[in-house]
Image (cartoon, rainbow, N blue to C red; front, side):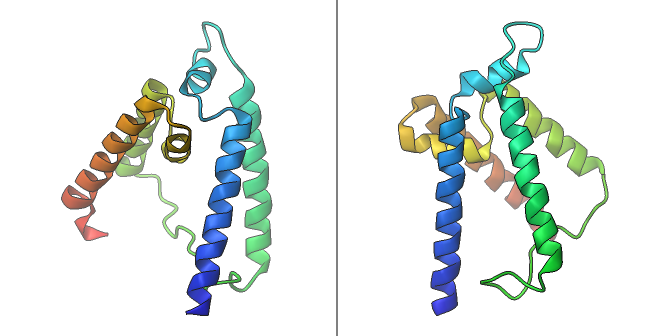
Length: 143
């Protein structure tokens, strides 16, 4: 029971820090993301710095994880075991990129944007949940 409370607290704190970082960097604004993707128009390079910072933090986290036997509030790390690049991965990545470019949001910022009341975000999140449910019901049965 105590472990579950610690896991929940750590997840909540991590999510709050992540959401605050997204808000602080302006990544909750779909126009900023679309501006980054508009390389032939009025290009906004700010997302490149956010992505670079995220890669640096993730790199440090992975290096620390490699040195630990297990995380603080679980018995093992839950890192992906499959390192194969296959059709479903490429198709999923392409769909993610299309959705990101069209909507200007990806799942993390979309959920965080709900807290600031951007109306089109709610529609995006509903569509995202429908897509996730559809995938789970139709193709995700074997996983």
